[in-house]
Length: 236
Image (cartoon, rainbow, N blue to C red):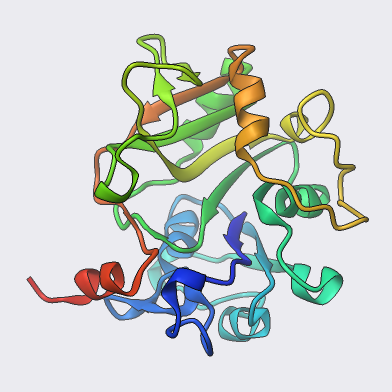
């Protein structure tokens, strides 16, 4: 699943007429980078949630985007804007799409630039064998998030409390069971359109040692401001 429903307030005025996942980075829509990476990893089915100007996203990529050497991919859309009038936040959006996602699935944000990240079946297999409910990729803290989000134990567990914390990259593997009681009270499919953040669900599972993590040190940018977008598109 790629998360693409946000309004992109901090990117205004660029996002007044264009959804943030369609802003171009190095010649491609921002969201195309993870789409191509998922296809290159051999994954064939993708769900994209949309809200703000969502029709532009589905219009740009359609149901079977042409990705050249990256392989075939089928996309379905969870249109939160059409169904509920706006975005449902991360956990609400995942719960809405849950019936389409299967027992284990990737989630990545459509507005984060991680050009070298590899979505692999080997990562999925390790996660399935671990018995954990989630596996997160953390990154060194950028200047706009110096306090970080989660700690990382020597055994590879994500931690609520730690002397050193890292930033959540937005990339993770999840079991559907994380989005069910006792961690999440939203029914699969989220028929009421409930809004809910993801962090409290993850933190509750971390307290039971059910979330693993690893540190990713490749290029990573949260494209959250026009200045960061300009920096990525400035030739070096």
